[in-house]
Structures are given as C-alpha cells and as structure tokens.
Length: 300
Image (cartoon, rainbow, N blue to C red):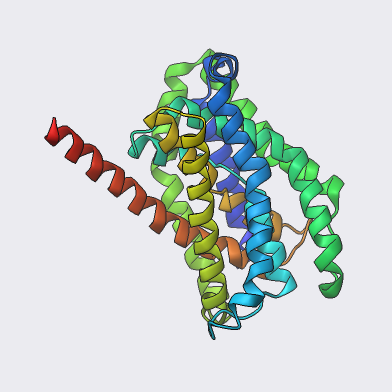
C-alpha cells in the first residue's frame, strides 16, 4: 500500500480542522501580545532547524562512544531536517489544552508557522538537499513543494476559517468529530508505515531514536528557556514548550512520500520515529504539569 494515499487526506483534514478553530481574534493576538507570538515563531522557524542541524553534526562524534548510534545516512539527514522545518500542527493545540497552557496562543502560533513555512521550508530544504542530497541523487523541486503546501495546507485552513466565520456552530460540530478521528488516523498511518519498513526502522532505531529524542528534549528545553528569559506567564511558557518542541510529522511524511517532491519513503522514517517519541515525551510533560499543578493547589 502506498502511504501517500493515507497521509494526504490526514494532513488535509488536520489543516481543515485547524482552520475550524481559527477566529479573527486569534490574529489580533499578534498585536495584543506580540512578545509570546514573536518568541514562539523565532523558536519554531529559526532555532528549530539550527538545533536539528547541530545535533546532526554532533551525531558522528556520539557514535564513537555509543555503538548503537551509527552515522546518519544522507536520506535520514534530509528526513530529520524536514521534520525540523515543519513546526506546529493541530495536535499541539490539544497538548496545550491538556497542559493547561494558553490555547489561543497555541492556535495563533500554529496558524502563523503553517503560513511562514510556505517560504522557510523550501529555502532551508533546498540548502540541505544541495549539500547532502547529491550523494543519493535527491533534488528538491521548490516550485512543486510550494504548490503542494498551498493546496494541502493553506487552502484547507482557509476553508475551515471561512466555515467557522459564517457557521460557527457547524464548525464546532465538525471539529468535535475530526478531533476524535485525527489521532487514530495518525496511529493507522504509523502502523502501516512500520509494517512496510519494519526492518529498516528496527535496524536504525538506535541512531534515529536517539537523534529524535535529543531533538525533542533540546527544542522543548529551548522553549522553556526562551519563555523564562522574557518573563512569560506560566500558561504562555507551557504553550511555547509544546509549540517549539512539537513538529508536524504528517506534513514531513507527506513531503517525503509525495511523488511530486521526494517520492522516497525512507526520508519519512525519521518523522515516523519522531511522532512516536514526541507523543511519549509530551504526554510525560503534560502529566508532570498536571502533577505539579495539583501539588501547588494542595499546598495552598
């Protein structure tokens, strides 16, 4: 089974669902509270790819001490950077809510980063593929990537926004359905992908699992540090930890598997492993925030 026929509708539905939650007030938040929005976007758009590239450069030195941390192949390097260039995703809004974060800020950051990556993702990935893609004959068709992202991301978000603007009750009803099927759909995608590539995933899980875990911990830590440095509120800090640390794995998988772009499912393997590790780590973070919140309330 070609996974592209599964991931395409999943990504489209996720982006449509994001649009259903958007309101004009979410964009006014940029003017009303520019500091957390700006810090979040800097973390998502600029720092994430830089951190990912630094980890990739560090891995050959780590592999000298850890036998399971083998050097990363060019295809995996492209896949890791693709994940790092795909911030946000509608799932981050759910995690922000579970962590008692600032959901309005989360929605604003997700919408803004989804639009900004229309331009930043092709630029960064063109640079990455020009450096490491030649060895495996991988090239990036920038124009096709831009068109695909507009069709699969911007258009569904815009349609969802329009539906919510004119028919808010219908938008809420649709959102209630979609939010229940989004996670099972992603689980189905990961399961099918694992069954198709289980030998490669198992063989490379040591190096890729370590790389993705370090990436998630480094980026969530970056979100916490940036929030602390600029004195954001507790809710804003929790949201930035999630928004900067959580990537749109569905978008990365779509670009990797798309016959118009890379058409290479091996490039999608880092995103699959990332999705697994990301959910485990962020669920642990949500659990810890809930524990500390209840402890603080008990002390009061």
